[in-house]
Length: 262
Image (cartoon, rainbow, N blue to C red; front, top):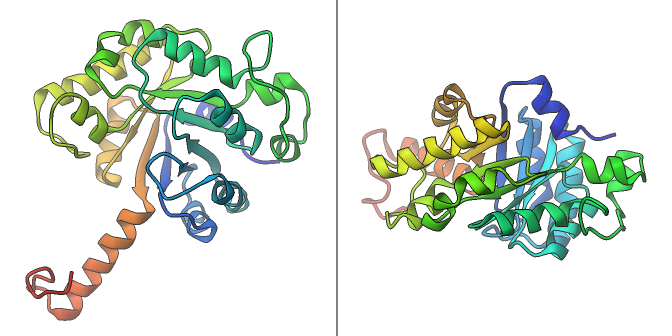
């Protein structure tokens, strides 16, 4: 039986995870095997479709981590298919109102709590259960607030019954605030927005999640009170690691970009 995200969060103050943008089950397995609590398969901005996502979920579980996914949009059928395939949580982008948050929650839950149709083709297998209370109640539902409108409606969004948490993509949040997109932003408006989301989650007893540029950033956010923290992305690690080794190969003081290597 696969690990359950709710149980992991109940047992630990903070869970740390990785992010997959590349459609590669072995890559997902390598990240999971490194000791991460969860690995998120990005079906929104990553190069991953449903046919790639399912074997990636399997590989993540086999390596001992928890499979999570970001769906491309707040479409009920996308959410249901991800959960039916065995994702332990869905992260849904661009939530701006409580009504949108409620629709996302409804898509995650079976009647009478929601509108999810029954067909847990793989979820029933990995959870060893066909009970809707288990299959509908265990998976977690997180939405992303990425715009000024979402921030304006923050208190109403976090008060949505059945919502489990908010996940922050700092680059998208920056873009929504009219700033240049990046993970580590110095602007006060951006920092204030992150703290506002964290505090709103804490008031409602929700999980606050965030995408980070690395372990040091993740440690900072864990200290602030975030509980669901992504510290590594496969595509970024691959490129950064390659650049680092190339720099060492051409000389520690050499600039690979200036030398025409990148």
